[in-house]
Each structure stands twice: as C-alpha cells, then as structure tokens.
Length: 170
Image 1 (cartoon, rainbow, N blue to C red):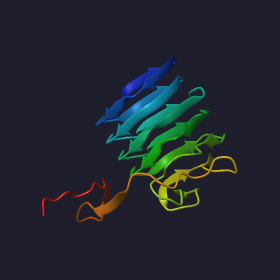
Image 2: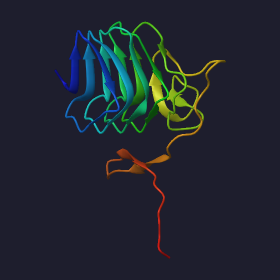
Image 3: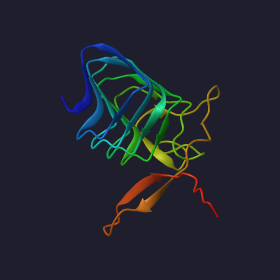
Image 4: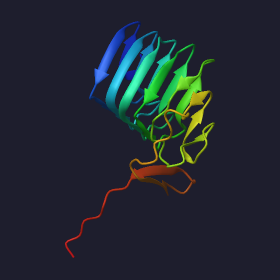
C-alpha cells in the first residue's frame, strides 16, 4: 500500500492529524477522495501526500514539510485543491502536478514571501506542472514560518531547519 495512511477507492476525511516518519508516502490515496484539514505531514521518505488516479481531493490548512521527495503529488487524472497550507522544505517540489488538468493551490505559504519557485513566480519550494498559485481574488501568502537551508554533509546535500527563537538567561 506504500503509505502510513492509505486509502483505496473510498471517501475519507482526516482532520487535525500528524503523519510522519513513514518509510514510504505519508498519505497515499489511490482511486479515493480525501478531505484533509489541518494535517501535519513531514519527514516521510517518499512524498508527503500522493493522490493517484483519485477523485477531487482537498487539503485545507496544515503543514506539509521536510518530506524527502515531493510535499504533495497529484498524478494519473487526479484533481484537487490545496489552500491555507504551509508547504516548505521538501526534497523535490512542494507540489507536483503530473496530471493534464490544473491544480488550484492559491492562498498557501511556499517558504518564501515571493511564492514558489519552479513553475511559480518566486524562490520558495517549487511547483511543477500546471499549478495555479495566485490570481486577482486570492494572492500569495507572504508570511509563514521561517526556515533555512543548511549543508547536511560533505557531498553537497542540503537539509532544512525551522528557525526557533534562542532564549538566553543572559
């Protein structure tokens, strides 16, 4: 099944959940329709969320970060929307659209105030494929958690860290 949370040919709602440290996908939907709300999906070996051959799925809110491959991937005639989420620090793309239709991903934080890189206009986590990130009615989210890239080893690998304030008794 290749996912810590796997849905096959069902309609499932998952709210206020944390899915992390899977050796495959964090969440995988196959021929299913998922409604995800305020989920945190991070530190998974493959994609954080994979929608494959699925019906229209939605992700509202939450954080998708630090997954070793894509944060979210839509493939094989899948449609969906992603809004109000924080997408940053993923190994490849924040959102990959490998379908023929457009994915609506307006109103998200991409890890940089100027939006996503890739097919997007900015320098944050990349989008790949036909992804709508802003329009006249819903623009880019310009504020989100701070994070930075750092050298993770001698072979030039990069990793990400979420910055937290340093509190000192001095």
